Image 1 (cartoon, helix red, strand yellow):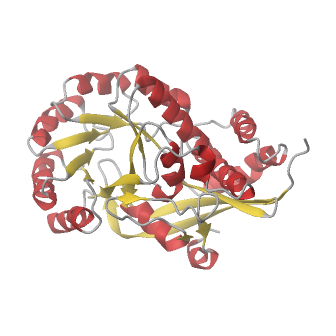
Image 2: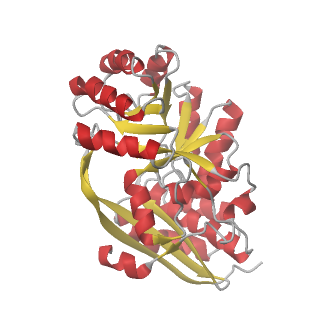
Image 3: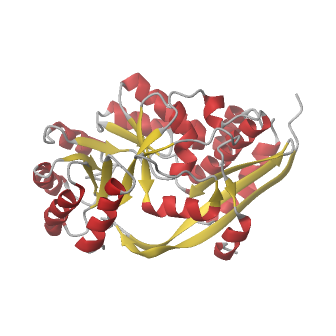
Length: 364
């Protein structure tokens, strides 16, 4: 079969200011960069994206686009392997993995549109809607803003769980967590340290957090410290799960976390781990290891694949990304009763970039 003709493959980067300063346990930021890929073929446009540095755009244009054009656009697995080989001497983790993820997402969107199917239907739905947890609670927020945001996700959106950042000032974290608990009542409370603690701090604070009913401790240590995570997991209080995996770039990274018994819940991020293909590979690993899966950030991008994932618990409704996706994409999902559902009247992933709205944020 001759390759399906790609008439356009374009990547653009957009830098969108946050609605206020934000920080977690290890970094602070005031803007988020979105890299969008659009592929035209068969009279359709497929779109994928990643949250990464704008340099991913040039890597897509200069290296990955050639690999897409060499193959039939329906042969997504073959293109994925070709892209991995093309970045071998560049370095597959990081920017390259994010760039590959965006192209993979665009290819799946394009294939579903060419077949006039919602992507969830093409992938094989396991569920019609996916629960989300509200995520934000940045460490620079004062208690008033922290409690207002977390409480709003519970009261207004019906979220069963919310997540807050910890780790910038460990001595203040117990009081912040206590205030969060008071704001959300009986809803589930998650904390995310972004690898900011050492093992001693994490163990001590886990005991404190348990008194507030915290049931999810995300990246208490760096995800690179798999043995440390496994040791901490073994001594966490009853009812508290250890979650990590958002910085897994490959299936091997996810496998290593599972083999080390480092996580109770594996987090996979389709904007980093190889796109829709990589996310489904993470789900297959979770299925083999009988381990729950959670989708990290980018809720609109994950929605259709999450509907098809066997081991999925929920999607992270991350404040920054949910805001950006609503600003810039037609078809972005909205939370209802703590869940989001794909619009099955729209083919593909159901999203379309509003170019006029995005143009003001474009990075030249």
